[in-house]
Image 1 (cartoon, rainbow, N blue to C red):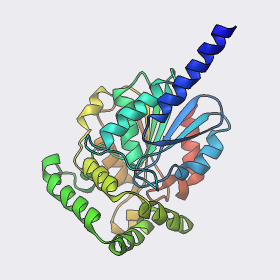
Image 2 (cartoon, rainbow, N blue to C red):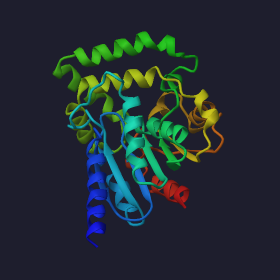
Image 3 (cartoon, rainbow, N blue to C red):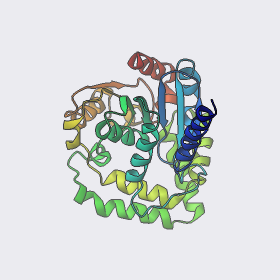
Length: 285
């Protein structure tokens, strides 16, 4: 009995210690099969609050906030941001000793795609929310990694070196493109202002200069891609044209389903919440 108690305490002590080694924050709620939710660039895990409210009725939800974002302490960037996050999240999941569903938005969607591809034993399914294997090709279909490096470097430099006033103005100007839900804009601005700009800059650079499309020829994990197009409707974008862009980028994936949100901007979970939850719940089932 005493030996069993010691083993129990050691086991749970190890779990707590191992989790504490991650540079990201985690909040857990609900019970049932595990879902990992990863937010996007400069976003808090609170972006998933409504999603978790529904999913936690049947699932154990682990909501991450990545380091350097929305007031979280920044991490060492010498080894890169995305590679470090991918490895840390995989280690976090591995301790659970069971495959999980992962849901990621934007940058979190890119990480979810990498996890599903490179750690198939850990990921049962993945939901990719408005994210591409090669971000730059979504803007310019002829883009290459080498072509994008100077532009990515310039964007990063401008972001890091701009004054706080300039940065705040830029964020205020860009947020209405991100969501059609106006009441959410102040929250997005607040998360951005509280984020570490060096981390944002590094993450943007890596997203712009990482072409993951050919890696998808090895992807066997079922994935659901939820795309948004409505913020570009005044610039000639249609659901069909954007869906075709997603299809082109994900064409090497063996088991991919692509669905386009009806009227959502980038934050689909806020702008088309009922549609969003229906897609996820059907995919989970």
